[in-house]
Length: 264
Image 1: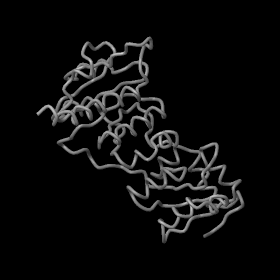
Image 2: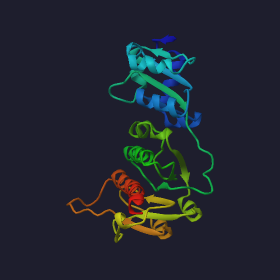
Image 3: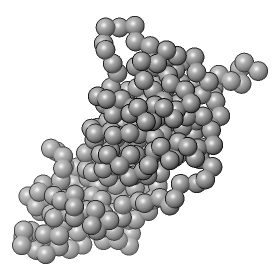
Image 4: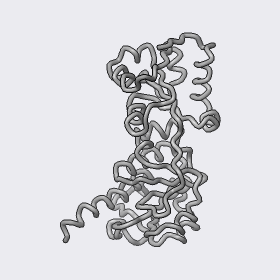
């Protein structure tokens, strides 16, 4: 293991630039994973990262040491706690970071199964939560419009809790073209829709459309959806958070799938 304690070290400077600059991350095609859970998820679902970084304190922790052992023969770079804190994006660092090649899935398959399409999602926490729900519901493909938040930003990665490595994420997508090419039913969500999602048939191949936190789906996407559904809200709140709304819809589909055999 190589230990660095000086901020003038070229390797530390490169890491700091990567941590501080989204432009640098995009240019190099790298993402920075912060924390044991994220790094372990990458190791389990993707492989060994490009670079592993631990702090002096992290090197003394059993969970960090165990994680490092799974990376052999990759040797971690050890930073003083002070330097490590400059790289970490969390208030209480867990002592491990990894630089990884940002996964870029190939062109989406012609015959897509059930998927999620997101238009103009702006909040990193919302997107991370949506990815978690998609992974938990067994959705393999998530498409983001040109104006959605960058899926591989540190805040989205933290909120995703490893879901990034369990689904295929397509960014900068023409959602209208995807909808028109989809070989199944396209269901959009809207507060103005009359049909509750619980009354919709979510079996078979379905593309779910979810819109911006404030504006909802655009008129263009609303027009090409085959069906619009809403989530009934008997309480006083005006609306649901988009991440919560997505979870409700995806797990209504899961519920219907589990209930179907009992009806036969």
